[in-house]
Length: 269
Ligand code: SF4
Image (cartoon, rainbow, N blue to C red; front, side, top):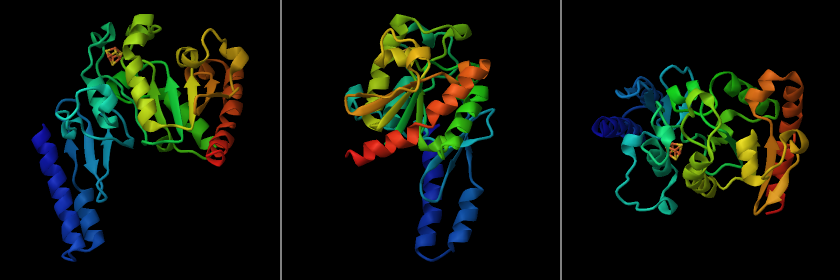
């Protein structure tokens, strides 16, 4: 598979080079590149490379193009520990991980997606059925609500990094077990280090308990706390907010705090 990705990348780079040399116009270059895409034979995802060299993925079963990086192009030869991996290497390692029992029934691991670095990082609980099919966090109804909540405060989904405390789907969407949370913990730690968010939003109980052990979400939601060099703000999980209209109103209010927290963090620098 990797050869196909390298070849594809070379073709796009050649079109870009011809444009730089003045052989074709930027419009011609964009038309060439726009017409090119590559299907991942294993998963059915479609990959595209922009003239600027940015990769985008449309997951099988999804209509959305999101930025991503093909695992086939990630060089894993130079890294020997998680603490030295970049964000793509972490994602690749998660994709092949068998460190806990959740790998047995997963379809695809879900490392997370979004920019690196990012001002805001959202940490949910674990992938559900749709996420497990698409290898993307927060798709389906919860994802749509999350996008709506972000839209309300002037953010796009692509502005924030979104992930979960466990990267593989717990069977029948059960709660992750302590040994699974423990096994997956270092991936999240490394992602936080690399993404270096100003604000971490915990979505649901399990990510909240990482920072606020034993706390009840109904008591502390929306209350930001400085933890180390980041602000952490616990919120209801969008899935819970979908079930309960009262919580939906609360999560909308809580989201409204995010832009001010980001601004504060920038001012304090
Ligand atoms: S949940 Fe985490 S630790 Fe367990 S198999 Fe998946 S990636 Fe590995």
